[in-house]
Length: 290
Picture (spheres, rainbow, N blue to C red):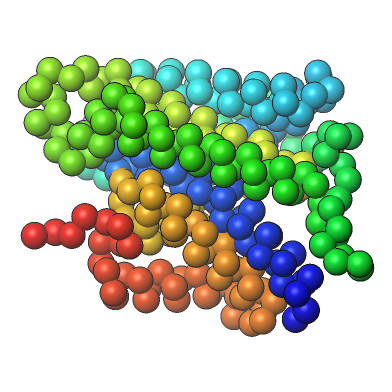
């Protein structure tokens, strides 16, 4: 493998890992902070892609498409938490799985009524349609580079909010000891609603930003949901930095696995997960049980 091909595959791996992190960070917040298993998380990834396509087609601007998809998904998350998800707090996982599976069916029906069953594509903006030369013979699409930069900025923003703000302190406190947080008089009900809505919006935004380099089709979130749970397990439940590490590891393993070991690429991710869990059963940055 020459240096140009290696650079292209490395950029693809980083891009894939960062998009996966956006989805998994929302999932790890909902799962780790609220204690809710949300099987519908992948459906919001798909919904975000369709919303981005619709808003972009209506406005002619991908920026409006991204903002519209994120805003609508955030509002849907607030409503779902207020009317459905809050009834799952403290309940058994079977109830959570059944409700979230029902949400998958509802979201899919709504998607079909609003957008149909057709496969759609989101055009890359003209100002991001070019490419950058890596070598004399090889280049890399400018939109993919912009996607990497955007995801990095968003990931840094997530880390800053969690580690440097009051709401982040409350979220971290709730993850450590939910009952003590309530006893201190912190309005955790509003925090729950915000965390769930942000988690949904992150999944939708991930689907929206990947739409111009992929196709928008029904069921596109199914595989992303499975990978997101793998990331959460790898990084440690409730650990956003762990989710970032796990997502980048999966991006590298999957991308380079398809290049060097294509016949085994489908199982390499799960081999990695098994190896990490044998080493640290709670995940890379998961809290060790005493």
